[in-house]
Image 1 (cartoon, protein in one colour):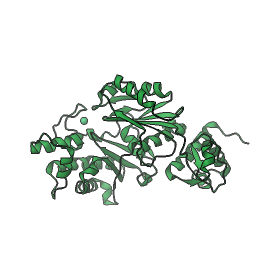
Image 2 (cartoon, rainbow, N blue to C red):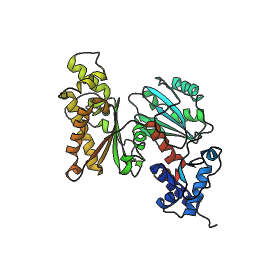
Image 3 (cartoon, rainbow, N blue to C red):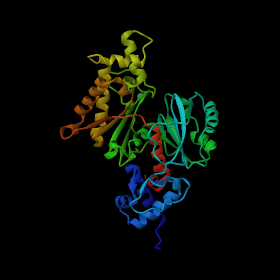
Image 4 (spheres, helix red, strand yellow):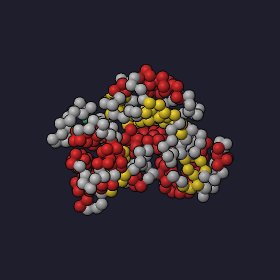
Length: 384
Ligand SMILES: [Zn+2]
């Protein structure tokens, strides 16, 4: 057999997994063709991936689950392995910390094995993590993938700024997870994880901007199936664009940021200021958004949002936007208003339709994809 340099083997391996990630299910022959390899070359790599528990054959699941390599014919269909659990995924949220043990296969729904209220100190959080980790059924995970809010330096595993969870800025999260799971730990900014969840769906057919609306507003650009990385770890911070005439003090230290108009707590505050009712909740905002005429505080917030989104499309050459989070809860009138505003301000609308899609938040799926891209296909990650 001709010797193949290790780096080339890893690149070929990454290419095959990437195609499976995008297609979901494919035959050996289809994968070989899509990855531009001969069938024997692809077949050998697929067998290795099968032994390693990354892929499995669709038929004969019982054989696969017994851990036998799937030496199938070219026509046999393959998918990412649905068992056993290989990765620990964790959403470190402002309100809740959630954990699951997942296989290489992408989850269809947002399932978490354990969760607890995120405490407001590192010491208590570490204690809760140790307690709840015992509830996960996984032996020797390949890696722990953790989504975190705020500004994150993913390369060094440090949170630089987290206005809603300040203790994270001083905490050594990587060490905390490593102590519990004894596996490599990777932090991923939560909007990037959300954006990655769209890989293998319609949105990923081309590059896109994702914007997520919650307690804050953040974004991520996905190019060639990967979250865009800037030269400094402040990518996608659309929520911190100052809006003219807005004097509100933002948690980032600046004044007038977009998120102080459109993030959930700020929409509540806008309505409360208008009605004088201190008991105003987000449900009241959603109700106000059902009125025949959208209230002015909402149209102003949506106009500013549309303008910030369109400016990113115009600068980066994108024609697709994916929106997640509370904007869906505001109802069809507010969504249509926002979409119309984006299209009006995006220069590409003069030539073609700028596509805007509303999607569910799928952090578990995004973290699993990040795990496959960064852990199963490490050469690919290291090159970027
Ligand atoms: Zn800000």
